[in-house]
Length: 561
Image 1: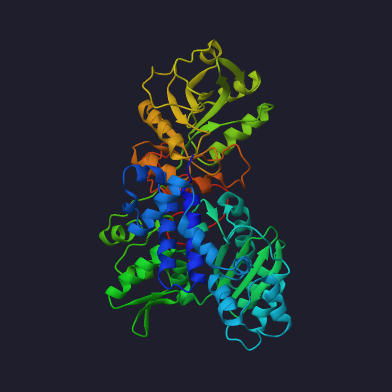
Image 2: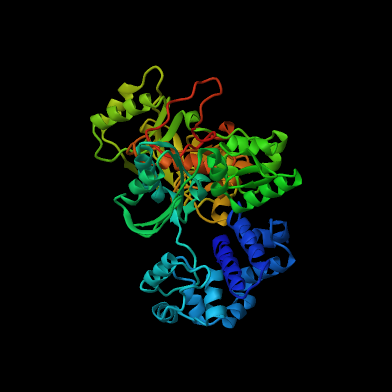
């Protein structure tokens, strides 16, 4: 199998870093823009190459398309190998240090003759950085500490973590900071707010009457391992496990502009600044300006409104046409937390009791979820494995009543076509949940029960494509959400554009603090899904249900003020 989209993007980002090291001015950003576009593609690069359509990808011109094609065909790239050979290995090592990017590494190399971490440590000890522009005492202290933690490995990239792992951290930070006296607003920006599948670091923005108190509470967080930087408006910490978190306290009049700026994405912001220039305006993290006068900045709605745009949901801010849609009033109305009203895929533990059944029913009623599909058994290879004891099934059946449906489901591993085990038909199951391991896209006889959901699968386009074909043929939805056994936002966008509805898990039988619903909903919104494109969403005439207990940044509408 050839290189994945992510691997190709990583090679392009490495080229950009190396070109920065060599002093190139414009080429690095071209490669980074192409990498960002490739990372967000809804299908594999190989399919674009097969169609001769690499140049239709935003930011991929003739030169970069040729390099991408070479990577896909051979797995390597002569141009990248030449760049690596042109730069001393010690300079590449410098870029692995925390806080040292390619431009700083270039300064060490070309201005100070420093070609490695040991040489940097010696230069610091000798006082060679003192008085050099850009290297204040605090920066030198950070570099001194960094040289003691230098690591080896491939070219530098910031470690990214799955968003579901970062959610509890983000939630705890918000809980603490929102409880600090004098704090008016706190939000998390960056790729986390855009619901990217992985997060490099966290950007926290706040307004407060006493910024020092906010910084004190921030640095006192139990997970803080190191305070790397603290100034009058910004503090940077590193948490246990290595996640970097930046906190900025801004004036209320600039909070919306800062939130918009630090949410990104970079391509979205570049497009926004270009639009502002066309109107004789300037937009930055402090506001929207006409000349020296700030005309907007307190809220994101004001920032976008000053440019003639509707507010754009963070999950759409990837420069995929959302700015033109905001200008013309064609932005989609994305699915929102209160829209989810059904759950089709609940696994209770095998040792579940009648009390567990009662808790599930109570939680469904509390959250106004009107349909809860419980898996009663798994069919695989002609065999049948019951999932729940008879008394639990009886307790669930007794719970069926007005306002709550509790249909039973059977989960089938592999192709359910022609599957007619006697246990399946006598289990009380009303529909099937198919787990494609794998499914072909060939025509087949209909399954013995309706297939409502394809679940527990994810992977590259060559795996997802046939499964989507089968889902469309069966009229089934596909489950999205975090983890390798669900579709991510790019695959969800592919499904949506192919006319296959999505199913967002609610985590109904999980811990109330489990972020699966919030993360999966973010993926659906990032895929551009409306309520009508989410199969387990409420009917238009039904009032929204209460939000789940999980706390965190809002996933719909402008942030609270």
